[in-house]
Length: 211
Ligand SMILES: O=C(CO)[C@H](O)[C@H](O)COP(=O)(O)O
Image (cartoon, rainbow, N blue to C red; front, side, top):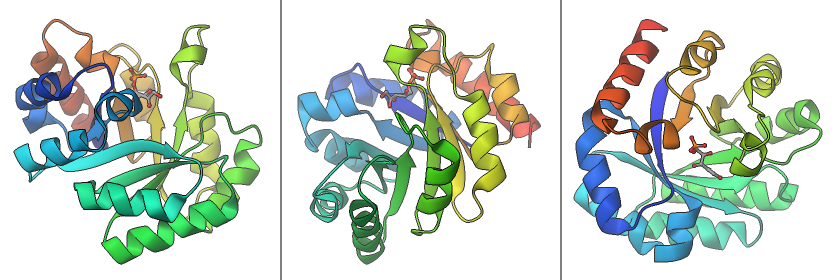
C-alpha cells in the first residue's frame, strides 16, 4: 500500500517546501488540478527536477484530447497522469496507448461516475494502471466519503491497482487501510495540519502496519 501526497492549494515554491518536509514518508507526489490550472505543467516539471527520485503524478483529470495531453504531461516529467472515468472509451484507450509509448502510467479517477461497478469493470479492461474512487471537495462538504465505493471496485477490478481519494484524515485512515487499497491519496489531511511531517510519518507507519 502506497501513500500519495496531493498538493492542491499551493504555488510552486510552497509545493517544493512541502515536499521537502514530508518526502521521506510519501511514495508519490501529486501536482493537483488547481496547481496545474494556476501554474501550468511547469509545476510538474519543477517538482520532478527538484525531486527526481520521487514519483510525480499530474492530476490533469483528462476528458478529451487524451493522447496529446498525456504526451505533454509526460514531456513535463510526470510519471502518472490522470484521466476521468466518465471520459469516452476511446479517450481512455488513447491515454493508455500514449502512456505505454512514453513509459508512463494512467490513473482513472472515477469521480462523478454513476454506474461505478459496471464502469470499473470496463475501464479495467482498457489496461489502465490505477482505478481511483474519489469524493471531491463538493461532496466532502456534505459529509460523503468513498469507502463503500472502494469496496465495490476491490470486488470487481481484476487487473488495475485500486486507489482512494477525498478527505482522508488521520482519524479516518484506519478504516481505509482495513479495505486494503493499493494507493491512499491524502491532501488536506497532511497539508492542512500544523506538523505536516509528523502527520505524514504517522500515516506512513499506520499504512506499513496495515500491510
Ligand atoms: O483531486 C483532488 C480534488 O479534486 C484532491 O487532490 C484529492 O481529493 C485529495 O485531496 P483531499 O485529501 O484534500 O481531499
